[in-house]
Length: 201
Length: 201
DNA sequence: CGACTGACAGATTTCAATATCTGTCAGTCG
DNA sequence: CGACTGACAGATATTGAAATCTGTCAGTCG
Image (cartoon, rainbow over all chains, first blue to last red; front, top):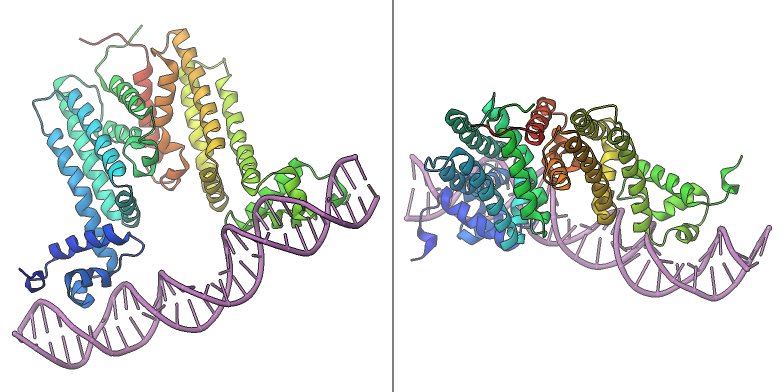
């Protein structure tokens, strides 16, 4: 039952690091703290992660991947029309971010610091999300619901356009009274732009 | 000819404050510095501005108003179609911000700090800009070029959608290779959404 | 043998003393 | 009289010495 006798794995280190970050915040969480929480010397942590930055990047990747996986479920759900899937996907992204920021602001601030440190991991996450959006738009083009000469370009445009509702830098406006209406109005406008349409006079 | 003998006006204080901010940056610019630059005691500065925060807010307002005025010229230009006006207005906003950030990054960083301090002044500026957008969209609805049940709602949606290309928080991505294409793709999508259209089959 | 330790050098952070700044106001000077 | 000064109290920022941390590695122990 004593956890100190278990093998030291990267997984256990990541869990301990999350806990230390939750407790102390990003500015004060040290590798020594993580080692102490695990009952080992800090040299052992460096056996699994070359630097403190690499350890923090791994924690960040884990956190971002949890969001990606939830959304991937919507992306792959062929029981919904592409338009519904796009609406639901964007709403789920907004809702997930808003909940994280609202439920535990300190932890959210911690992850904002972490994502600000690790360009590479964030780039990959954004590429994953725009990839999912691309697949939804491609499905819409295939079904005739959408018009998009280049689905990837449209996907990036939609992702940029909705930045205010998923970029952590905007988290302070997510709880403002009109936020939900603003979000809906924006998604309506974007869907009007994506939908197949015959030109007007 | 000696400037120290001229009357001390709010205007002269604002100019001196801009200069001090340019020289020392937002963290080190003090009211004492401003007074020294003007050859007066700092008590005299407090005669015109109740607090240091009010002085900085006044400088910020001046800076933001310069952008608003340039754009107001496009808003009011009835020789262009509403669609062209909207494209030009958004492009001018992006270009103005990108130039400011690129030409003098330190000064731009200074104003980012100032705008972060003064919620009220920034709110007014944003209300002014969305007001201009509203008028352009109203003109488009009047001419039959646009469909928009509520032009103000659409204007806010367009402003939010283009945040990545005018919000200072994104300035670091404005010089990236694909930025101009990303901007164009986004504006194209938004205009498709605004244009009057007959429903597709 | 190989996972782990602990002492170490250089880098970074903390902390408390010191200096500077903000905002006020009684008093000066033209 | 009224614009301006300069000394002041409390708040904030700077500084440098001491403490802690990061990353390494020769050595221990099962």
